[in-house]
Length: 389
Image (cartoon, rainbow, N blue to C red; front, side):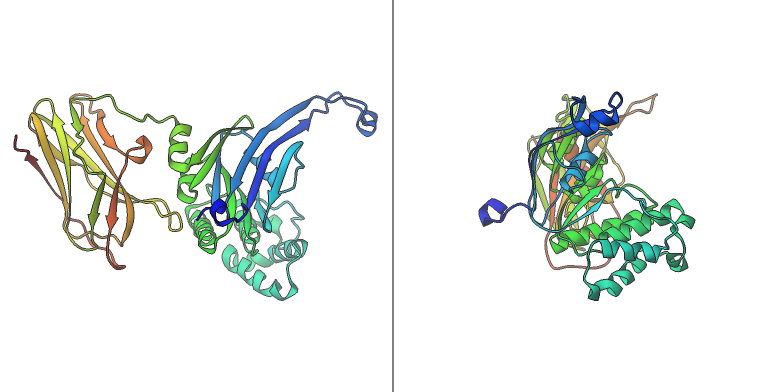
């Protein structure tokens, strides 16, 4: 149920928010104190309006200098808006950068404790909080050594653990899910997905479009401080990347008889049949992949089948790919199909037709049944059947 339907106010609201930064190169101290000097200003945000429903994490995409960090700091109260209104319904924790802006002579434990006191956490929660920070950061004996002795990766672990161990209802996150080693990123993603399952609200500001697709149902795109695009994440990301929506028709294409959805059951045989038209007899390759779309679990490529070579006759054909034992648990998956040809001589791979999320025409695969743990090996069998006239 939407917030408007339930009557619940959004967790975060920004109404026509602008932010100016004054340029001080030619100003004297007296000018600043007296306010008599009209200083030139740089407008970093222009009439930004956005809304974050309770229980959702919304993405904010943009290149460097687009205004993402300024927006987060304005929403978080570090900067006062020059115009407009910011309203937050909940307690806030901000993750602006993976670094420790503090006395680096403090130990990791002392830094965590000082942050806890600054956040006015209940005294009864102190030891539980410290134990959680120590467990997540995995610093071992270094947790009690000065932060100045830490590597950049160790500082990142400490800062993320400290910032996310508070039981807040709103998180403002700036570029933290695309840094560090793969192990650290995986732990960060797991914590963010735990937040979503708990109903936490927030904003993820990033230039990494894949992070938005993994975590956010909706997103905004900032360009020079203005909202350039907004809406559901998949179409917005496609526009942000400038991806084409359609192919120019080649000599081979998927016909209108192609289903938009397929169904299967765990560990049973799945046969995927794709209708193709060919202007002349030719050889193509069929590439099939499956992606998981549940953002409380992740957005991941869960299966990529080896390309199946197919000899097509002139006219209507059906290409079938059979998976004898489907190793997927129940749920909804995106099904992607690519019809490819390798150019003789150069070896260049040309896409003749495709159904993918980034072209806005992906198919779905619904796996029905009870939860089925385990993994099965794949033995793929491809065949081509000419359709009768």
